[in-house]
Length: 159
Image (cartoon, rainbow, N blue to C red):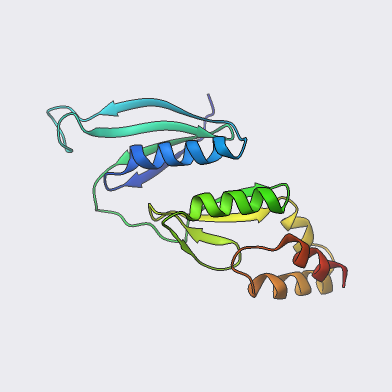
């Protein structure tokens, strides 16, 4: 078991979100699994018998979905990033995670549960680091995109 994991706060949709994320990653050929489900007892604070937490893994990273109520809202200050090997994988994650969500910019989307995702090429860091001219061209191209076009970024890098 990893010593570091992420706890994602939900109003009441933690189980649905965990199932959606696991299904999405499995559909894309990635490792994903649902773990344990804990339910609220008579002490609450949620309704007795309702889901309190769901543990799950995506690509070996452990998560806990906590149904904690509407107290805290999500923001873009924290996002989940998926590094994709090619355009087909990027397109697949994009369309699945975007289902009932909304597009943002530069490879970011907000899923139906309100979490921010970055769907990016695995070599993005390489494309935007090193030579400043190349980095500037790639960033200029990236800033004009919603869903990332890997070939366009590579053309900008090579220009």
